[in-house]
Image (cartoon, rainbow, N blue to C red):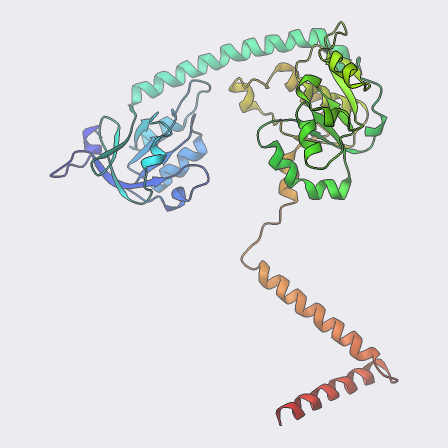
Length: 397
């Protein structure tokens, strides 16, 4: 199919005329997307899963706020969409949401301009076959090069920190309070405050040991909790948290020098150092909990996965990867615990509770009726029932 055949011509304005659908994460547009529509998404490095969902809906075009391929990873999604004869326009920018009216007709030109009537609401770049193939090859080679460098750094880290990872050399001894307990490690990452709120039932039920990492210690104190340990640079932690009674652990260089020791001394509190060639206080907190025999370690505010490594996220370091491999048997991300404690309501759940309430009420009535009187349980129940029936009969006669 030629590029021009993708566009329908009207008497007034050229371009593809179709209903626009907001298919961004959290919207309902993807469910409402129909054949011939124009889908507007926000999906950098679009996944095969999302591409397949779009293909099944059969839109005429997909407009992406971001780039279909950023160059971070080689992804198949763009090629799948082009193979399905779907027009792709990318990098229109987040300003498209200001003018977009999902469910109303719009117009997409062959130059990547998106209109509502005569009003231009966004402009991007039309993505073609040769560009997709070239971007995939470049991203593939870039990923290989970056992973070679990453795992080279990983080997260097193992050379310097094998004693720490294997035998816990350098881990502070003052961690007996963590043994055989569930431990909550709170780091000041994105959404950590919201996650901590959603973990309140877990905290109430299991009373885990609490480790505040950097400003995560302040969050614990602000929300009414008392951290058992604080790990991090005191310069970024409030005095109230540092004076809360928690054991303070200072990250230190391998030679023992700890930044922030002066602040600890000024506040008049004690602290121990954790010497290691590790930049992340979260990694140190996880190792502290694992070394001292924590039963389970719940990680708040510091998720880690392979995608983070591929994307070269700042906190996705070799030490972070090795630390999580070390504590893997005990480590679980907070989002999984939150899912376990979230009651997902279904369409029949209300009826279930109503029926359960009626059954309980009936059981209570039977027990009370059978216990009131001098006869047997059944005689008492029959007498009570007859008295109620007579009362109703007199009420309505």
